[in-house]
Length: 366
Length: 265
Image (cartoon, rainbow over all chains, first blue to last red; front, side, top):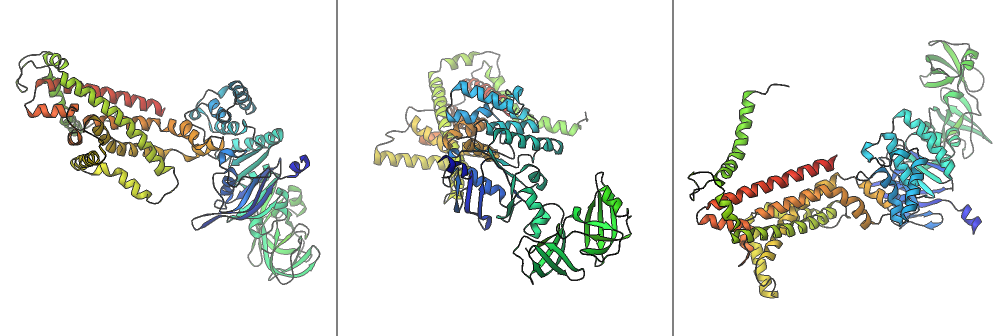
């Protein structure tokens, strides 16, 4: 049984759908979130990520499908009977209670003895460096302090799973970066499962161990941040994670992972693919800006295209270049100072050749 | 500071005069010794003394207080429930109709409300033997009908401003809906509940039209007593009584304003 329990996912979402009137907020989503993961639901607004989180918390009932937590079906259970706690985007601190009473709320509802509540509240406040602020009312707290208070209130119940709805969205940029690191460290220290909703791709990549990318209520791709960045399943996924240079064309030859794509005016480009590509299908070759290199040598080799350097800016650790191809397509390139020197230090307006390696480029059919 | 124009000051003075000069005259004349209300003789507190020994007015005063307190409390309870059904409950068939119907007593002429309630009580009395006679109970019930409408409006407005996420947060922390109501919703609604109670209390204390329809022998509220004694010619006692009422109302409003101001902080 113990082995079973360890192998069981913390959260299993099976074929869950939810409509609001005519809008399909969540459309047959199936997901498994493992114990101890920092899982992130990522998507633009309206992608259904928050609705999915609210269904896991129990605030919304799915129209179809099942949700299990620790192997137990909780689809019909109300929020107050689920072993999860949520941290709200707006924090939802009770304005009529002090910080300490806010944090004590969940323990009081469990009917814990007074002495235990006092020590656990103090410990939770200490954990989040809020030791001296227990007597304050929520309106006397700064944004960062409110965020910690909300976190303490959710964590004091020692949930196995913590749900976070855009936990950093209300903080200013500087605080947000610090809070990111703190959340990751906190999860490591407590060893519990975090499920976070965010629309910020950088935030998701910086914090999550796995990410589910959502669009129009459906999950497009699940994987590690690196996986999603390097092997996006579609053009949308590629462009969601950072900048992607896309060259549209048609697959002409597939040889294992090596794929040749004929792009009308650019000739044939070489790229790699995990599989599922067949000759004749429409596809795009995707190259990230950091995989694009420039040189003064004339074009001719594999994936080498004649171009003009349109603009160039030095951003400290790298050069960002905008290149225009002969047929007018713009391509972003990102060069380290060493790469820039190796390219012969071209200036804006000069004719250059751009190239990218077939191993780094990906074929996208969707 | 910007100088205010003479016109604005005059307008303000006229506005205040329009509202408060009649009350001021009433207060001044309550200290008039003359038996004739409109003729000034000299200053005295004679009528206050006589008022204290007027058992009829004393009884009516306490009856009015009792009716107002009971009907205000019931109005606030029902108003809270109605507001919750409108703003927090699941959507139910006829909810928009419900919202309009609860407000009806505010729109209907008081005469109509009073008359219809009188008919209802007479019919109930004939068929079920209850209420066997009209009096304090029927007045209280009648006052609840419109007190509840006002209470619903006040409490619903506050409930609309209340972030439903707070109630979700309570549920998330393990509070059942009933516990959530007592620990989160009601405390946050409290300023509105108090305001609604005071409103319903004042309206009940004020009402003469509906009360005179549904009252019976032996149950005369203060406004009914005042009204009937005025018909026989105004006694200077009424001036004294009115002055006391003005002071009491001013006190209640003052306390309520202070309480609300403190609650908002």
